[in-house]
Image 1 (cartoon, rainbow, N blue to C red):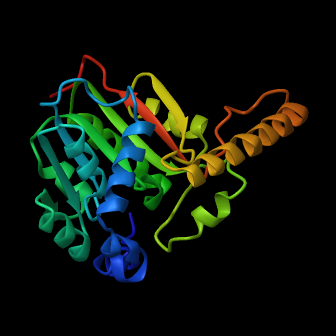
Image 2 (image 1 turned 180 degrees about the vertical axis):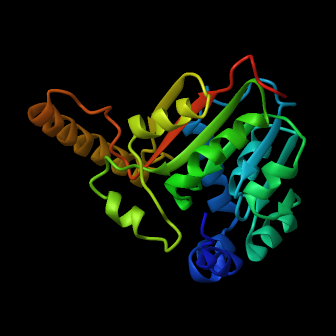
Length: 248
């Protein structure tokens, strides 16, 4: 497949060019961000706090912090960007600086949880199934894979699809579930990513979102006869589990 040279050029300076907020995080942002992530993933994380966890394209380590707050002791990440890896290592995390596909191809380790937040949309259609198969190889039997990615069913889908030069594709939940099953995963579950309530202002924001959600649901019901899955947030999350026939 053709090399996409712009990827390495942008990832090398991703914080400076695309995500300056990563370098501006403070204790309050970390606290709220960790609480939001854990709330949205309630019931999806492994019950065993000794589970081996790997975050693909971990960036500055935001989700690794959430896992640490939740009590998970074996957490690590992989990311290509020098700036992001530096921040994650400063926070005390074990992070490998390399292309995540190379990591999965070369590693012989197995994990109980693999996460990929805002990752899969950076790959082309000709790469995605291969990537998903590589992830599955490194999951233990009944291991969990969690994805967050832009949602094609959101009315703001285009802003997320084209908001990053390295974005290649966008999915709705049914399309991505089909790709995951094609790669060998079992059941797939999907969730939206609504506003997180942590203050009076955020509670008002959440209430406003629920009213907007009802409007989109009614629109879909009128036009198609269904809510079309009921996931309308700009991002969506999916959980899939590995089969008992796993190689790990």
